[in-house]
Length: 82
Image 1 (tube, one colour):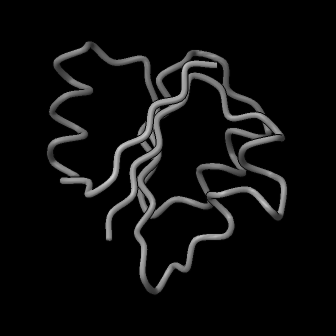
Image 2 (cartoon, helix red, strand yellow):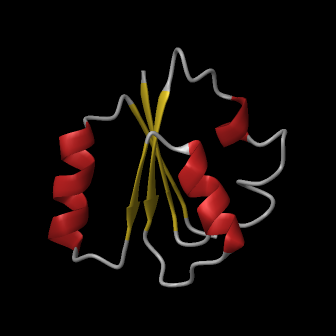
Image 3 (cartoon, rainbow, N blue to C red):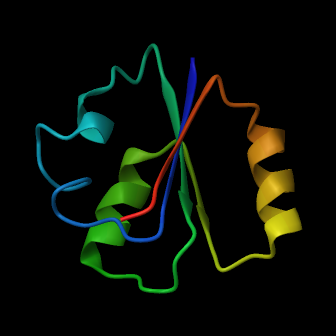
């Protein structure tokens, strides 16, 4: 199953914690695709990127994001605006 996660900011609560959703998914069953739609990149962004099968960094145009996400053909897509 392909699981996509799009966030403007990957912070400690989402990526780095051992009990976070991204770190708990079985990599034999799930491919995680991350999309960093924000401009700020820090150590937590790098942690999140390492948890992903594929990680795309923005900023990109809306059309470019659409093409990236459609090309990955996710089964589940989650966008958190936090």
